[in-house]
Image 1 (cartoon, chains in turn orange, cyan):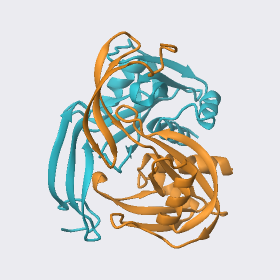
Image 2 (cartoon, chains in turn brown, cyan):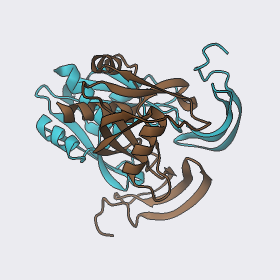
Image 3 (cartoon, chains in turn brown, orange):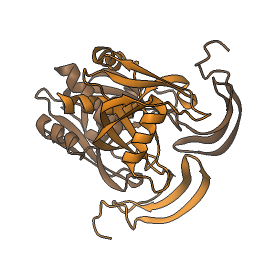
Length: 180
Length: 180
């Protein structure tokens, strides 16, 4: 079995419950490293990329996006699921253009687990600099508005709990640390 | 309908696919604010709490936890799902004791959306100070080891991508900003 903390080889069975646009949801029978066998509900996700568009003055272009699951419109950074076979950096540049109307030069920040209790979703986080405008290209099912905000305002919104999305806060704080 | 950006009143139907320990997974028919009707796969989650145990010298007690979905053992902060009717602060103190063997005084940091594209999960994040030891109390299905790490080492692990869990990075960076 190799490393006892490695999940490889520990799955004894899997029952698929639903396969759809967010991924494959199922129940997996797993032998834990402590010897106990458990049933775990896991959403297997294709992965995603997200990007912090950071301007020379430290200001950031965020998007206001309608998220039904979150109960309304929230602040996020541009992000999207990986297409089959798509490199994370390609996905990040695609979403940066489509959702924020920007092109730029990427720096990788981190591959982030969003909520590892029940999904393998990894969001590949990037910062984007040397930004220039390109046409927005929203999908029919996306309700998104990009807004450029000064660094002090973004900082205040994080402290005030007005920005509440995990990938967005991690991305912004790491991008600023990289820049400082 | 009130605020056009509010999700209240926009759900036209819902088909339940699975109800289990992580929540209720289903497909919702939704009228978006742009007038389009879409089907969205959404996991309705009971919510969770997580807590950053921060010592007077800035060191932090993290846990090493086996997460099958994440492919093995990862670094996290103590966290768990809310029991029915449980206040987030109560849950945070319970998990702090059970998973890290610590008691302390809480400061609220933020209610965090983990991945709002497909779940309403909110993790209520806290910092815990004035820490003292109490007995660990792990569940049978938890494989967890608490480890106290110096601030410089935690900072290095974030920069190096060794800590990759969203709530954990947000919690640590916000707890340090609060302390500085």
